[in-house]
Length: 99
Ligand SMILES: [Zn+2]
Figure 1 (cartoon, protein in one colour):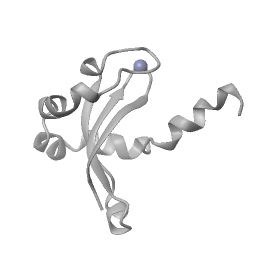
Figure 2 (figure 1 turned 30 degrees about the vertical axis):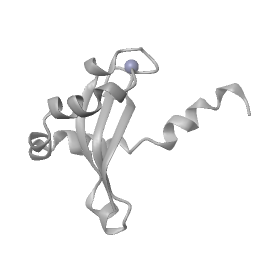
Figure 3 (figure 1 turned 180 degrees about the vertical axis):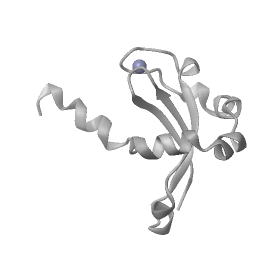
Figure 4 (figure 1 turned 135 degrees about the horizontal axis):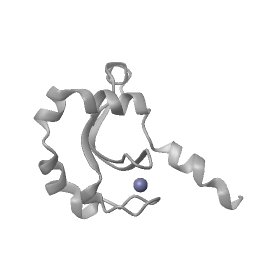
């Protein structure tokens, strides 16, 4: 396996950005899940951005919920996501709900 195989690996466990942005812009969803709560629960386990090394506490925390069709197809996911906006990278995901 060549050294530069990193790319597909990070694709592998990330979600489509359009779904991430939809969750982030969903004010009702975010209001129900304040950032402080996510940090309190998961900051200790959250990794820094592997690209720019920004610590997790300074990255963007949002509550992610996959779109309706994923729940209908029994592959829905919801939980805390930590995103590096500078690198456009999903750094951590802590799944809380799945079906
Ligand atoms: Zn970064």
